[in-house]
Length: 241
Image (cartoon, rainbow, N blue to C red; front, side):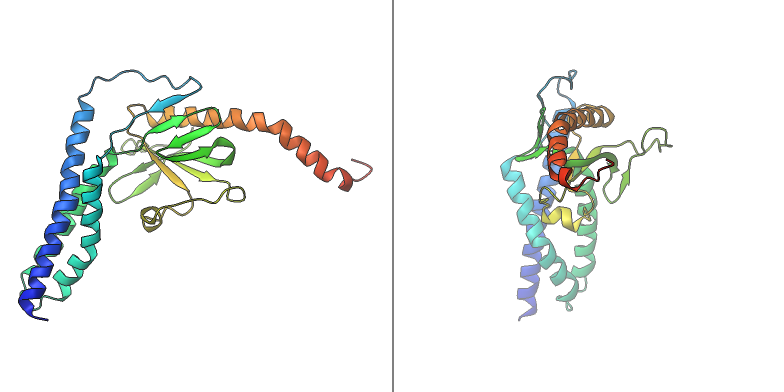
């Protein structure tokens, strides 16, 4: 293939990546600033149903972001390996991508999905999960390139690592977890989902409210579970039992 054609394809893909990912990054920064300046109010987490709204990307920016990430891998491969006669392409490609990725992953921390808490479970975006299927809820601090599990009560806590997400794990014997490709790629294997806290409430209060609702849901299920277990093992009990 002609070297000039390869250069043209590389530059086109790189521009598509910059427009897609860079444009969505700029959009995220604008949305976060508008969200920060909104009239803040107090959110009561005690009612039976609580709807929490988070800042979100509009559909246009989501499509631009997808297009940018699709162009990322081929643009990087062509820029680094396929333009041997244009030595300036490789360093520029790497510098642009490293810088833009750092801005993107830092900015995206303030974008979340709407969360609705009910007595039976919670809805995260379009996903509905029952409390009785949740085995663990824990807080964590997720930064641009790292994640730290938040300490439990009584443990030492790094003042710079306040929890900003809630991680949850499901009972895999009852439900099949659905993790996106991004979650699998980012290493989210033990936990089955992450709730970014961009709702204007503290993560500690949100985690406490979720754990309390899960506790009440489990207590409501105990009589039925006890009857099921008693009926299933009654014939296996020893005479001394």
